[in-house]
Image 1: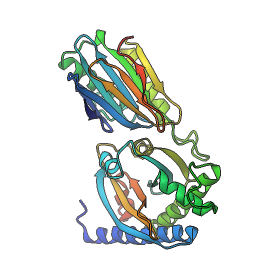
Image 2: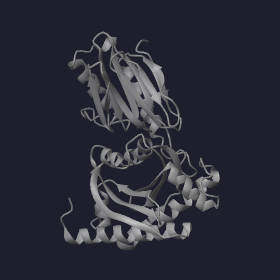
Image 3: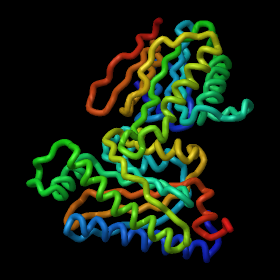
Image 4: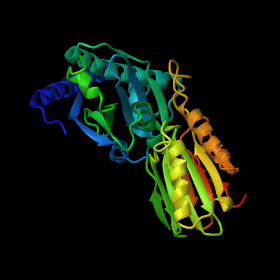
Length: 198
Length: 164
């Protein structure tokens, strides 16, 4: 629960502006409009995040990045397999419905999309916090959602305990499926985001 | 049959033969399945990190304290440690992309911690499907202690039939 009004304002601005910039990055890559849906932030436990995104056995493409340096925050971009295939076709210039697996070229294209998204989001956090957030290289994984997301659970050490998340999704023009975006950190990140670490 | 999901940092025990204890989507976490065939009691732990760093901690989040808690609960329910069969699943490393390799060997550390905890109890491990870079779903059938493993795009297969 975040009670302080000033703190809420900062988090709302990071969430809104960061999500918008991240969406602009994807839109630029895809060459089409990308809409941000329901940007927000909250404290929650990991099992609820996994359930909300389709359950631990859902087969997905997950692209992971972390901020190196001053603020420990982890970003995961999650796409259903079918959506990942369609976006890969668009990114690498293949005809529609021809890609049925993610090869090295597709993986690079998806990594670039995550790079755009994660970097823009990290830049927004840096802008508000005056901290350095150097993005790691993106790691593309195709597996069960639970297997992929628990990387962050293990890295933050938070499991049954709550984590802090920025959450949003990106919807492509005239498409039903969404690209889910989660920036996750341990609750201690609040002191960096709100300037209480000095 | 009823599936009982075992979430991150949790364990479940059961003596109901109609239940299947299940961990969906194990990645670097390790699943420790324990079955006492005489008592018909099964337990499954879903641990995330290798060590609690605190001998008194009973959290199932950690392999060491989780195994202690699991065995305590099994004994309270009527299982006897000398009769149990133990299996390990998980401990994968999905972060194999350039720039991430070697940076996060939590899967290996989880496996090692579990193996050490089991050996310290003078128990042997009846079946293992550990390591690699793939996620797994682990099921423990309470009726007979059978353990199965499934990976993405592959069928469920038997790891262990309940005996050693």
